Structure formats: C-alpha cells, structure tokens
Amino acid sequence: MNDPILILGGGINGVAIARQLLINGQSVVLVDSADIASGATAYSSRLIHGGLRYLEYAEVSLVRESLDERSRLLKLAPQFVKPLELFIPSQSRLGGAVAATRNFFGIPAKRSTPKPRGAWLVGVGLTMYDLFARASTLPKHRRRKLTAPDVPPVDPKRYGWLSSYYDAQIRFPERFVVGMIADCEALAKQHGVTFELLTYHMTHRDDATLRLEPQLAYPPAAARTLRPRAVVNATGSYVDRALKRIDVDSKRLMGGTKGSHLITFHPQLREMLAGGGVYAEADDGRPVFLLPFGDCCLIGTTDIFFDENPAKAKASDEELDYLVAVVNSLFPQTNFSRQDIECFYCGVRPLPYRESGKSAASVTRNHILHDHPDQPWPMLSIIGGKLTTCRSLAEETAEWLAERVGFEAKDLGRDRPFPGHEDCRQATTAADDGEMLVGTQIPLAVVDAIIADEHVRRLGDLVERRLMLLYHPRLSRATLDQLAARMVAAGILEATSVGQEVAECEQRLLTMFGKQVAS
Image 1 (cartoon, rainbow, N blue to C red):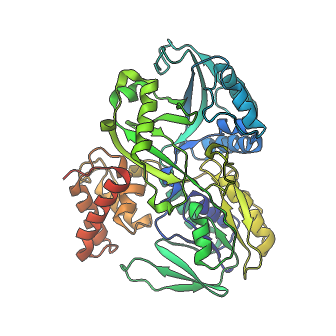
Image 2: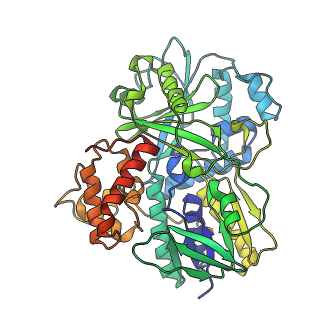
Image 3: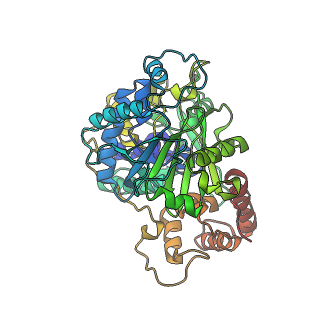
C-alpha cells in the first residue's frame, strides 16, 4: 500500500483530482477546512459551457477544451448535466465590433463602457463556437424571430434581433461532488488503496510533516500527522492563505473576483423563460444569465475584484439592484423588484493575480498548475479551473504528479461514468413511503441515509449541500430542528449543542443568503 498524496481543498477540482489519482491506484488524503463543495463550487452560475465570451479574448484553446469536456460530461453524467438552450438578444446589427477586436488582440479599450454587441458579432461568435464543438451532439445556433411562440418575449422596444444556441446546465454541482466522493471510495476499495476525506480540518506544517487538526469538538477526534508523497493545493480562492498556513514561500498567485447571483420564484418570469435561458448584456457590457432552476429562476452574475477573505464575500445591495435592473431591461412587463428575491449567494472565482488596470472580464479563465520547488515533497497549486473542465484539469494534474512521484497514469478516466444523483431523494435506495421531513417530500429514511453515507458534519452541510434546502421555499425552523435531531441520533451532533447549531445555521442563511426561515 503506497503513501498517500495529500490534496488540500474539497471543491470540485480537488475532488476530481482525488478521483483521477484513485483511478490510477494512488492513495489519497483529501482535506478541507470546511465542508466539501462549500466554496466557489456552490456559488457558480451552474453552467457546463464552452465559454462563448472567451472567444472575444482569444482563449481559443480554452474554448476547445471546454467544449470537449461539455460533450464528455453530457455523456458520462447525464443525471447531472443537461442540455440548455440559451437565447441572446441584440439591440443593434453591427454594434461592438471595434471593442471586440480590441479585446481579441489585447488592445486596451478607449472607452469604459463599450457599445452593446450587435447581432452580426454574436453570429460570428456562435459560428466559431459551432466549429470548435467537434464532438458535440447539440443543435447548432440559429437566428430567431422575436415574435416566435417558443422564445422568451424580450422587450421589442429595446431588442431587435435574437439568436439561440445550446450549452448545458448542472443544477446542483454540490451533489455532483458528493457523487465523485462516492466514486473515490469505490475506487479505493477496487484498487486496494486508501482514501480518506477529512472535512473541518486545518493543515499545519512541522518541517516535512503535516499535521491535520480537527476543528469540530464533536464527535471527538485526534489530530494526525502525515508525510505525504506529494501535495496539491486545490483550495481555490484560498490558495495563497493555504500556502501561508503551511509555510510555503510564494509570490501572490490569486486575484479573484466575486460573483453574485439571486434566486426568484417569480412565476411570470419562470414561464417566460419557457425552459430555456437568456444570455444578455447589462448596460456596462457585463454578460448576465437568466436561467431556469427547477421551479424558480437563477440570475447572475457580477464580476468585482475581491481581495478580502473569500468566506466573507456577500452579495451587496448594489449587486442585487444591478441584477434586478437587468431583468427589467429584458422583461419590463414583470415589474421585477427586490421583494421578488427568494435568496442570493456570492462566491469568489479562483482567478490568477492580475496586473493593475486590467478589467475583471479580461482575466484568463484558463487553469494553471503552479509548481513549488524546494519543498520536501512535490507540490503544486491549482490556479483557476471551473466546473466544466474539472475532469481535464484532474487528468493534467495526475500526469504532472505521475512524472514527479513515480507512477504510471495509465487510465485517463475519459470514459468512466460519474455516479450519484441530482435529486437527493434518489441518493439512496430508501423507500419513499413513511414519514417525511417537515415541509418537504424527502423521506426521513433518505435523510438518515445521507447523514450516514455522505460525510455530513454540520447542520449547514445538510441544508446547503446535501438536501439543497437552501433553495426550498418552505424551509422552516421545525425543519432545522428535525434535521438536528436526526444528526443527534446518528451520533454526529451533541444533544446539548442542538440549539446553538440550529441558531447558527438560521443566522448564516439570513446573513449570507438573505434566506428567511419560517418560524
């Protein structure tokens, strides 16, 4: 049995890397200071896409890679990744061509607010997109009439042209990560190697040894030490902070931007989307998506430089007003307002540090493997990465490690299906009859199975990233109380701390997500 490779960060990239290493028979310890998928993974626009707008910044290789991975995920994870038709409205025929040309060649813009991209420019981009989608089975782009019955009725006084194309959507990447964790466990058993997931642990360094310290007092757990074969820092926007904690001297690597989204159950808006999404421009030229999201709509995003602790990133009033204004510019008949917001969320993109004066939109979305030489073990930090390319990033990382650690990465994992289910009610084989969780259609037997099998440590893990109750319109205090009681019964939560755990969960939902829990 070989010594483990240590991965810091339990987001989609860290877990995908662990899975790729286990596919090739390597032991892995995966550590996160919080829960799995509790960073940018949970706070994205939830799209699996090729990056249409990346073409404007000449990132052709990234678009090709993303489109290839989009096709692969549609095939290997159809229970999570589903085709989505997107509509692009245009205000003019020829606008934006000069600004787009400047962006393509990296020439600084002369004006702070570019002209809106016209229908001709959109058509050129979509044609290139279709050409680069070599393995795609999705329909190609089309010009559409604004009066067609199957298109979103955008404001005809503002928009004169409409195009449509296909990308894909992953509604719950949090549950996709849960599925990959289950695959890691199965792979470890298959290959006779070890896989350990240590959430709510902090990593400290003592020369060539790393100390992994539990952060939760219950259930009691001892700190452990590890001398890894290699270390992968996949902590996303926390990369620089993680390096500092384990005394790795490095220049600044991260310069993330925060992106905010809102959720609404506005029935008219959901009906207008008619199962598709809208990809529009705000007045400042920033692309914004209006997307179907189950029975509600997801609207985002913003792109603002953010240098503070990523855990403190929160959607501001200005950002929410900005997104509300975009909705009303597209669909003024909805009279959309802040009162229509069910909840919101905000995350920090793990982008590379950029030179001053560079716009947020122009910072590369490509991933970078940054080597840290002169360490006791081979070590790299992952800069960038997104939902769509998590598997290809993992493949590249495994090949880097294979060369330095000394194993052969024979299996690229390009044809291995992803297990798991988007709907938590399908996450186990528990029967659907019997008592239900308060205010939901989730059987308590399913709740108990998820608590037992899906590495739940805190109440927020259940609410935000397992049962997806953050987006449930009837989440109540009684629901939280019942979940806490099930955790006590499972030996995960101490009975005397139930009141505090419920209160902290309720306060976080209100403060960070604007989510009101019914009394």
